[in-house]
Amino acid sequence: VTNLTEEYNGTGWSAGGNLNTARFRVAGAGTLTAGIIFGGHTPPLTTATETYDGSTWTTSPAVLNTARQGLAGAGTSTSTVAFGGGPGYLNATESFNGTAWTVKNNLNTSRNSLMGAGASNTSVLAFGGETSSPPAVATNATESWDGTNWTAVNNLNTARYGAYGAGTQTAAIVAGGIVGPGTMQTATETWDGTDWTTSPVSLATARGRLSMAGTSTEAVASSGQTPSITTATEE
Image (cartoon, rainbow, N blue to C red; front, side, top):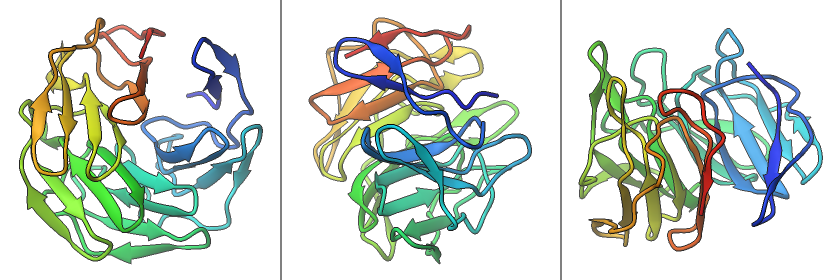
């Protein structure tokens, strides 16, 4: 388990400030100069929340109400939603306002290793994930969050888990992921607020457990497993 942080400038990666709590299968949101990370496995499971100012991670006094891994997050460092995760298959949702995490209404579909995108804690999209194991079963379920409730909307074209999403509630992107045990995905899909569309442009390296950031038209996908660990980065 590592606490390493790296920053991307459009050309290459450089070392950033280390996390205070080393962990994996975390969720995060925000930007390079105003980021947030929460949950994960250290081991054991953690509720710890940290914020990033572009150089240093600071441990927040606010912690998740439910310790979990494989969750998703979306929003900004002061307006964030955390949802889903494990152990097992959770539907728990929490909202962060910059000061405290508050328990909110649950997802309709319990799942872990899901993806998310969104601009604030009142405007988020949740999609994909794993609903049972073994064998692992991927879902294409998509839900939209309005700050109070989750509403089921049109599904992904390719069910997958262990990817990462980027963008907003009305303009999101997902690439890669796992469609079954040991089966990595290259397919990319974009969301226009109503439907998912499979892009003719796929990842060059099929992988799951990758990281992704940016917008639906300008994104970076990096690292992950192929199933071996990779450092590959694609724009």
